[in-house]
Image 1: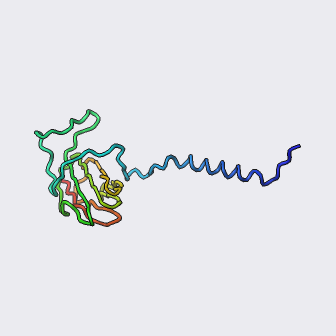
Image 2: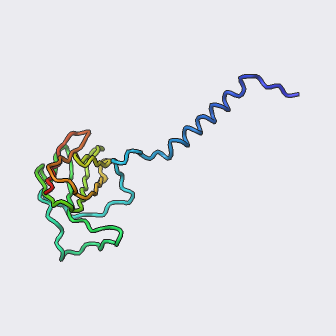
Image 3: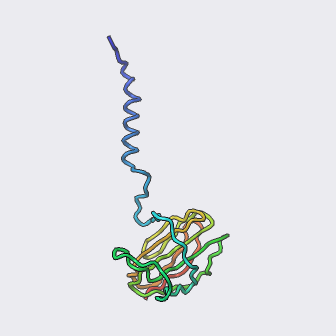
Length: 157
């Protein structure tokens, strides 16, 4: 005859609860849609200046597929020893342009585009990327959260 002690089910119940909790939380993905982590490694981009001029039509650029529109404005920023390169300034884009901001920092941080409430994780030494349609006019700060550095002010006209 087999006799079970009343407390012998506690470990099984705890294990079941733990497995259920882990399954409910998913695979560790961030549920905040405003924080974007690139799913593919970024491609090398030519350094942009604070004015971030649009890519000339004569330069060789990868062609966009029908589902991926061409980027109108590429803005590239590097942060090293709390110094922003190119130096903080204003970048003007036209309303409706597709903007891609790429930031590489020597320390882990988070990029944030005010007014659009967009962000990206910035692992140390790895470019973070935010891409969006500039559909709101105004002046918007682009900054890092941890180091509190203003990278540039985005002017959308």
